Image (cartoon, rainbow, N blue to C red):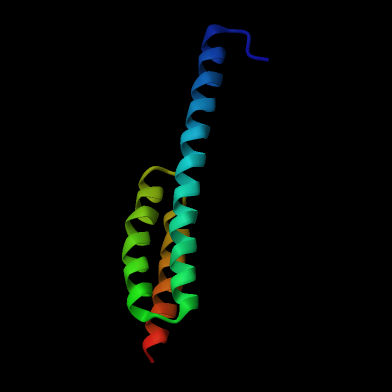
Length: 88
């Protein structure tokens, strides 16, 4: 257990940051799920709208350090390819 004042403070900070990151990850997953559901419905317009909504959330996850930028690039690439395929 943390004994020094500095270690105790770090433990408090880590707890706070973990809660914030958990909420942020959950929010990103919600947007991703909405995009997946829009793609599954087959409605390209709804899928495009969902894709536009999810992109800034994913990018925010990168800037806040919750997700790696290559992970987000891969997810966006795959999502946009699937949305594009709906129109074909």
